[in-house]
Amino acid sequence: LMLRASGQGIVACAAHGPINTFNLKPGEFQSFDNRRLVAWSGSARYRVGLARGEERGGIVKNEEGLMCFFEGPATIYTESLSDII
Image 1 (spheres, rainbow, N blue to C red):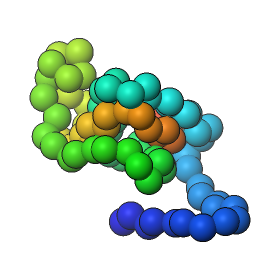
Image 2: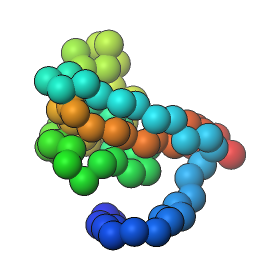
Image 3: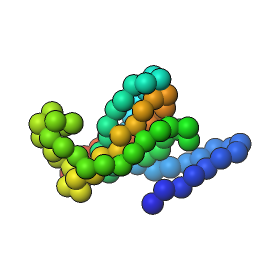
């Protein structure tokens, strides 16, 4: 599920644990587990693709096998709590 918000005002969202902020510089690339994504800037360029071992240090820990690959400039927000609750 994705929701696009625009205009003026406050957007509230919920996540498991603290939210981490990643500020990607122009031309910087970063991959994220799609299960951890909370939000990202509307101008962010991204694609969804299959996770491969070399993109996660040789170990794929994503059960779905999907990752989101972002290119800066962009601001990405992820949740930090693991599935062990």
